[in-house]
Image (tube, rainbow, N blue to C red; front, top):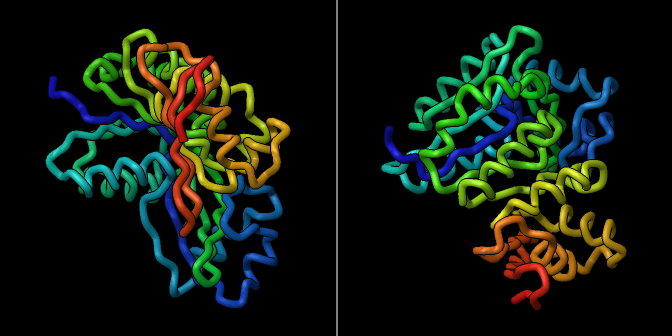
Length: 277
């Protein structure tokens, strides 16, 4: 079997983007600019509203799938694989086509229990607010992962997200342990402040197996506050992440915090050592 550069695990999402120059939609659905949230029952009508818009823009999305497609765009001769769960519907078929056209080797699980996950992306000026209903993505099963676990031997790099913890925490734990036990390099994206705030135990468990941890300014600030630091101390948060428990001590951990137009923070370290900023 051919080698794979990176295998991604995530929540495949059908994106519906709409412009909201006055912020009316954002305000009506109580969305925070620059942040992502999981849809509440009160927010569910946003998808029909977005779909009905004549100016809507649609496409394949989801954090890990966006990364997989970006990697193929940057290196079209490379090999990328993607795992996730979709519904047996038009949105799922659209995602499958987009993935295949990108040259990605898909390992989609299909369910009839839920529709394909969708995300309303509301654009106000240069900022966006994301409201996701992950739906079918939460049906990703251990049976599906175990049926294809041999694929993981074909790559050196694995990548997953905090969002995927909400879909199947057991799968994320298994992926992390597989990385450690088989000397694979694991990348992990914190994904959103709510993941840091409400799923910290699994975040720490996944970081334990990770060589690369990614986050943005909001996620880093949430991590700082969760560890009794000032929200603005993102370097401090990155230092904590870099020196947290690590299952495979043969390599350091690299923490990459983006800050929009501000400089990106990169911290490298191991438990018990002074990290490099």
